[in-house]
Length: 514
Image 1 (cartoon, helix red, strand yellow):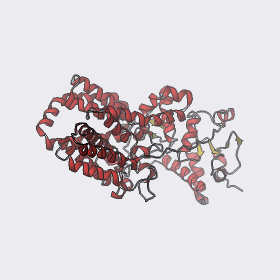
Image 2 (tube, rainbow, N blue to C red; image 1 turned 135 degrees about the horizontal axis):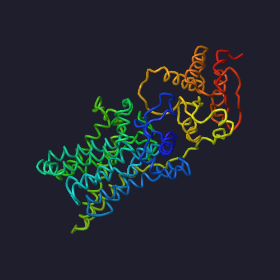
Image 3 (cartoon, helix red, strand yellow; image 1 turned 45 degrees about the vertical axis):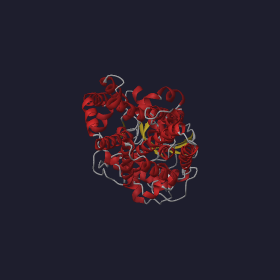
Image 4 (tube, helix red, strand yellow; image 1 turned 90 degrees about the vertical axis):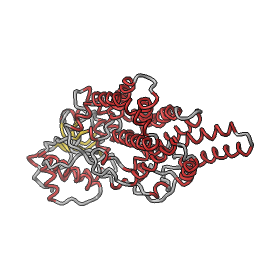
């Protein structure tokens, strides 16, 4: 539901002359920087025609459904450059597109699933360093444009890919230093062009994030994988296990399983003389370490990358290794002059395929969206709570409040929301947080004392909130109605269209409910 809000906000803000990277519609009146959140402005613009005609829910479904097949397509293009045959590249591409990383984040993380641009970045980086199918400056231009587009989808995955590429380059320097330094010397000017184009195209996002907003640092400590997480499948795999993991369902994307691990260990051991395998396998080991250890703690930008998400880069490594080995085994199968040699190659191919069965994902289950609330947009609402008013919408503090807000076409602002923001010491922020906390306490059945109620009434007036609106269809509706009645000191002023509404009257809020 949060992502649907983002998908609708971007085109709405652009059409209404608002800043797409900052809003006070949430966490009113201070607002929140969307540049530090997963606002996916690239996808918001891409899906704008569909969003504005059919709604953000359909846009979300279409985009998240397209994520894996687009990843498979561009991954195939990338892998096909590294193997002599198509089917090993297709095999590796499917592994990447439906890996445990992807299947976990299919639960709703659109920014982490719409990943089709990242293999294109690898293709362009290889073109810049080694292949050179066009002029270096043109490649730098293309690389900058695609990088800027990816910044508007997921900066985190871009950082993970950058770290992975740097690891590959460092490994290559150890194996063939002269070749790598020569490639860098020939490519650095075009790389500067790529950086300049990226900064230029993405400047509105980068300025809003790095200049106009305070930094948001994420606590990543609870997202460090353990070695057990690599061998115990999650509930997202068909053959997963019920073993406990602190990562949870969506973030448990590091699972490999013993069959895959055994194939990887044997494959690397048997092909260690291959310089490319040596470099890529070493990169994989380094990414495993990054999944389990907060090495970049305190490093700007990288400190907020969730460690377990380095598995995204790890599956690029695994897909490349499997594609290379399967391609080599197929070649040996065709060239084998004896039947035992043919059988050995065929069995090896079969075992590699069987090992990946443990990674087969379960289908993604759907969930119902909140019911339509007819109050929003009604004649009564527009006459008593005009567009642009600030209200206390209950439930607050989760994705449902954001869903109702975008459903109402952003006609009101609210102190609640579900987004990352830096700590604030302003009194207005504290007042909004207090009201959200009272709403959370009420829906969780926690008793609210008189002093908190008085503070909540004062917060309503301090923020100049126009009304309290409770969506009655939510499961916690009765508790939230009781809270609103206690805050207002009287019954609702309007009861229709799926909502109960109390107009805020500051002059009478000091009167306790009889």
